[in-house]
Image (cartoon, rainbow over all chains, first blue to last red):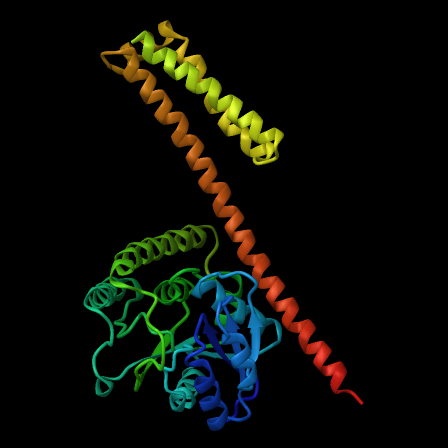
Length: 243
Length: 120
């Protein structure tokens, strides 16, 4: 597997307990793969530890949230001419041994994005009850919008090609990007594929989405989904979407 | 009823004074003070215009001038809040873009410095 013109993007916020192992694991498996940790103004030593582990670090001077942090990485990758970007979380939940499979599907199918989704053998969703309901709710909502089922619309394990990078570097959902991203792609007639992956327990830290935040999450994302639909419908009436 | 209108007039005057003081101390920018001053002046005018309020109340179908006044205040301040929501959203977008640009520029600068140092 060639990793030329491929960048591994790890958005991280206060991940000092896990970032060293995540970077080291990727470097041990794929020494030629370039790793960029986008540090979202962590208040701990995430940036220093990532740098010490051998990653390049994009340090944001203000905390932007996940979407703003990922978009900064996409903008840099697009500007530097990368053809493919793989994004994994900085908490160690995503197994880097799955990276080649995501890249294979991205290159072979010609789709714009590949999502690493939780395989059945790696167990159910390791999250609390309210969030599980939210995920099932969004599966139900997204099916008619996307015209196909999606197993885990909240997965942060994704690979994107340059066409998607061009779009995301201009426009990217800022707070909870995963679900809205699918709608952005669909409205531009881009395609995505899913690859079952074995997810792991996070190495350290806790999810930022608590039970209470899950309610806000559902409302926020639902609004974002419909705004994206309206926005692109409005644009497509003026000018048809170009691929 | 008159006491209510007097209190609202006093509140409007206090609001104008607070906004002008904030302007003088540069706590508020001029362009952002316009909405508050316009709202305060509207409130002051409404609280002193009993005939206008009586006509408005009759037109809308409200029983009292006070209800018409409250409706007017609600409309004015909803307008102000909406305007500020738009301003804040615009500023947040600019802040995100600037933050990302600064981070990317710093990254590129750092890379250039490393490359220069690596040259013999």
